[in-house]
Length: 150
Image (cartoon, rainbow, N blue to C red; front, top):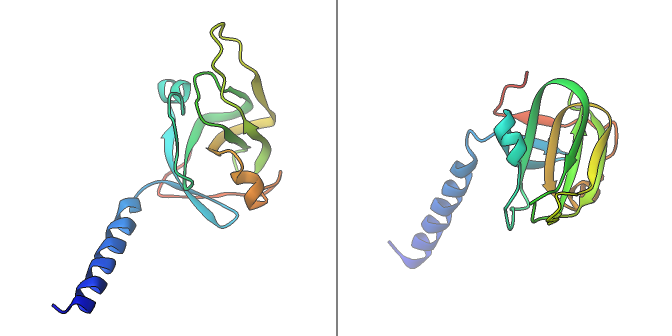
């Protein structure tokens, strides 16, 4: 192979690997940006959430799935990275957004609570600043892929 063809081949192979990394992963699309999400759909994974993580890629997040709509409230105890908390109803319509929820490292266990402004069935957490940067607003509808919702 000539050096030019070799570089092109390596670039294409790298692109194929990067694309394959996301194949089959669940995702949520917010205002045209796709976030590949971890799913928290049982008590244990919902309780742990994104605790104890030092960073999260800009195209990553966590989707919390509940069996029914209800008022929800999240907190940031033992969460090390600031997050946007996006509450969604059963139709994936934004109920409310908590912008830039700050980490809480309280020894007493007292951390602020961030309640939804209405009943929510799903909660999306992404890095702080993403919701504002994308212009996400109450009433917007998100899209999901590679997962079946209740």
